[in-house]
Image 1: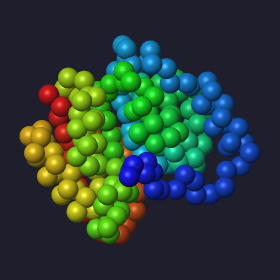
Image 2: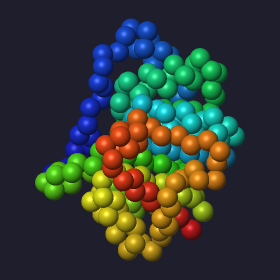
Image 3: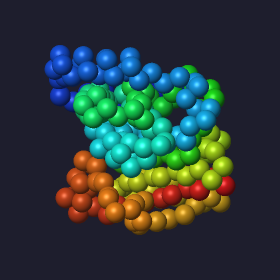
Length: 210
């Protein structure tokens, strides 16, 4: 049986007509074309949620192309509003699941890839729903350019351990405490803040693709 592409919500609060209009206009004016991947330095974030980190990337890496992949409509609406209100030109959104992005853009590659606080599906019987599995890791490693990096962050130790063990088998791993330890500004997403509020430990993994 074919694995279902997505198990989460596509929206939480009902979007206003203005939000829908802004999202539609943003997607029309910021279309992702295959030519985008030929020369540009690319940063991809899969599952950008409410868009806080995606916006952070666009502001701190202005000479790179930032692509967010997520079917969550409320997050798209927030990102669209920010980009249109601040004349942001280096940020693009693909409002569907990663599998569809992978199939549509055959020639895509990336320099950095972020997967921050994906749904952990904590119950064992639901682990197969997790985004990050061995097939996914193998796929994204192939799409990384030389010296590219994959950043993974979660507050679920079981999920972290699963990813760590998979990466360890590929012999391409590096653990760090904070992705932005060398930058003046740090960003904590809604889910990161929620984890801190709940007293959860944050587990970070950086995978170098040499």
